[in-house]
Length: 630
Ligand code: 7RM
Image 1: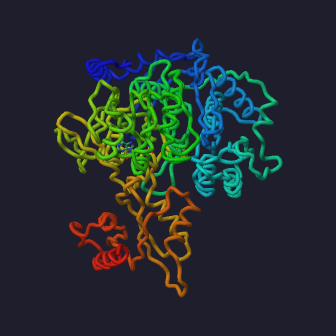
Image 2 (image 1 turned 120 degrees about the vertical axis):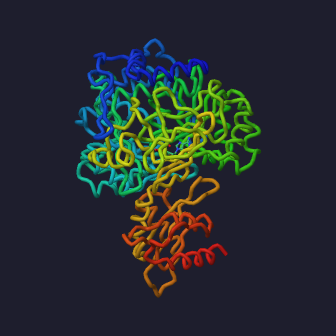
Image 3 (image 1 turned 180 degrees about the vertical axis):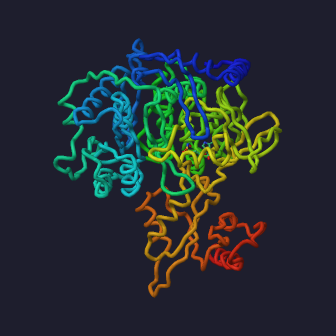
């Protein structure tokens, strides 16, 4: 673990001067079946990246067998949605039993190494257990956030030809009960690869069970024992697929492999949260996102930490819930998203006043840029000006935290993610692809050397991986983000420079939303852009051309419902403007920068619009916008 600024400088220098040696040394902390000799081979053109290629291991052995002497430490504390329901705690040895049992149920139903398993679960212990069970037997998990629609779920099931879907009979979320099993049933109408649906009982809801296909987990688990030897995996075997949105087309399956991901998850967890044995750590993300994978499940458990898995939402029963949970468990490290901070701030300080937050040592932020006001509120009211804030920048594709302060080692600066972790070589490129070497500049954020948990491919479509991340700037991994570097070399992430909208820390592609909107039968064409939103960071603004209609139609509700149905509630537009046309170039491309300006209430400095096919349309859209906002 890095312990001082001097130490950081030494680590960083070593990691850049001799990356192979740096990571080889770190790899010795792990339990290998075959120790690797070949540390790294790579090129960013294909791309083809291999870490510890000739090593073999199993990540769950590095969680359970490696840390066997701490087997009675608490691994997971599960806090239910409803505070009056009792929590559950698992020691490492109890968790190990659960994982092996679950793994045996999968095996019994024909799941083998390399098979894909979709996990569509609420935040219950089985979410983590089933991920680890897949890893134990070498099956590839793909967790789908349980808020996605049947249509989004079936796209993912089909894209990776999953053999099994793991779900539950329901999801307690705030005051609602959501029928997740019903969503699975609906999704499977469009999939024929799935042999079994394994259903965990959670809510006791009345659900349909399809004979021959659907199995209750609690029945299956009685038929197996709790001993399961770990499958021997090579370092570059797939560990998981996680779907994420990009600027074009459907979400793509980001692929992470066993060893590199494992090393980097533990390395970043230890250093960024400065976790010590006995601490209680809480990340509020959902396991359906990469943050949940790396910083609820894999990073903490590899480290032998005590990690809280929270089923509920920040505002149920009321806006004091987070603070009460911190108080209840004396949480030492707390990791959440700016959107949650802003939402809770908006309820006022009375909800936080009565909780004792003095156990906190480090507080973190992830998912989107944190604005200065939210940073200050977090610092004053949660950290009590006494906890470093780790503003961690990273992505699904990077697997782990890339740029972040290290608590009490690298000074924080509001809105700045600050400095790269060891092994990470960020650069800013101008639009021509030249590295900008000075400080006090902005540019396209790229990384010029591989780190252990860089994505390896996008599932089933390697070309797409190359095109998306390795073609814009030859020889670099392109993040899709813009960044600024200050006079001290600190990085501030400015947000996406592509057609991705970051709504409450969730990435949503404009193309995806437009495709959904266009499925509404009243719609001829649409264009969506992001615009500043007080709580969500960015909201979704849709410009819509509609068919002529005799009827009175509530387009706002109708379009939101369509998007809800095809993607899920997180992608519903916040604003809709009916327009007579869209600003298009001669080649038919929508000029989104104009729409982005209008959506954020700015009507000048449109730049060069002479290449527009229909320059008059701009004034017409503005006039409709002004009518709408009145
Ligand atoms: C971990 C995660 C990735 C995108 C990324 C950025 C944005 C994430 C920060 C941030 C500013 C941060 N993975 N982003 N963290 N922007 N400061 N600390 O969120 O794949 O879902 O999203 O999120 O735009 O490219 S993600």
